[in-house]
Length: 85
Image (cartoon, rainbow, N blue to C red; front, side, top):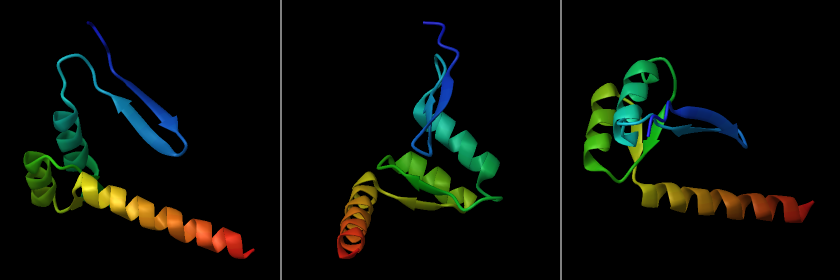
């Protein structure tokens, strides 16, 4: 109760804990609206409303499952690359 929210950087990824009475979806929608037209942004969410909101602002969107698959492929490629050296 009374959480003011917090942002921290963890391994190059900004982690956000939303403030009290602010949903993650609301935070994502506001952030996408704010930076989506100025930066290459991709939103990973399986929530259809978040995806629709992302689509309206012109940013790329993907499901959480697609993000997991992409990360698994990237991990395998990195392992193969570094095993060759």
